[in-house]
Amino acid sequence: MSAKVKAVFLDRDGVLNQEMGDYVRRFEDFHVLDNFDALKTLQDRGYMLLVATNQGGLAKGWYTEDELAKMHNHLREVYAERGVVITDFFYCPHHPNFTGDCDCRKPKPGLLLQGIAKYNIDPALSYFIGDRERDVEAGTAAGVKGILIDSDQPISTVLDLIA
Image (cartoon, rainbow, N blue to C red; front, side, top):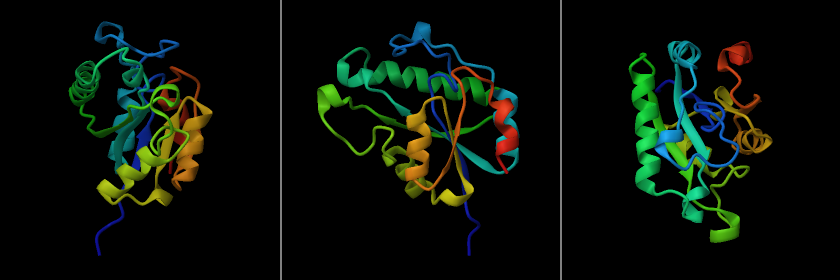
């Protein structure tokens, strides 16, 4: 029987890149936070690293899928240069005021459930680090332990909460 896959899901804005207060609309405003050592530690402990982020600015037309892909590729490259592999990005492109209800917008667990299914992740061994209560709610709904941090708080300060 194959070993259970364990993962740490990460919110994006305020966790991996600087919180801008609203949406990061332009690549020029996308500033990666220095969580390199903390994420390397988690990776070394056997955790797969995945991003789960609401990107309602897409539905609002504030930025394009191409601009979002540029941000995500940049994030992946900056971490890769420091030996950290971000395996995948899951994002909700919807916004309730523009596209109605969906199953993927946090606090719903859809983004995490996509990752769990795609990579055969054991939710009981996994975590979700986010800077909003909705991140913790999404984690709980997906059977993953949620860890709430302040926006732009170093992930190193919560490593002791992860087995």
